[in-house]
Length: 110
Image (cartoon, rainbow, N blue to C red; front, side, top):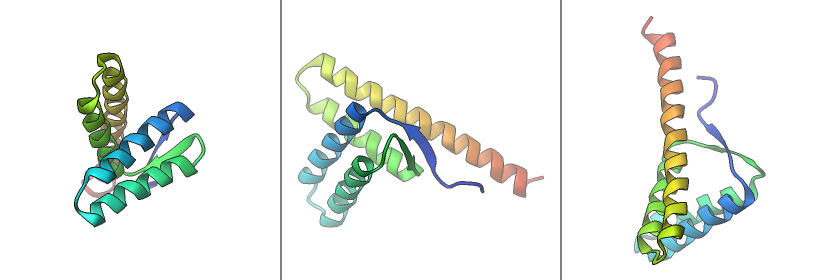
């Protein structure tokens, strides 16, 4: 395969929203290893400039954290922002997996 990562363009505001939701989720998780993974992912997102290379597992973690944050929000408009961003990340993950499967199928099934 050419690349095992999907590159996503995020604005600074979107990066801050994602990092905030990842950190809040990491604080509420009782498993130390899992909490460290979420904190590390938040640090990775904030340290990289606009184009971020993420694999499928990282995109799932981000989407999960955004959905949890949307569930905690009292304001419906803010929750909608979290859910919309979560859907964008999930769509990028689906596109990434389709491209990866097509490349693997072309290489090994034909």
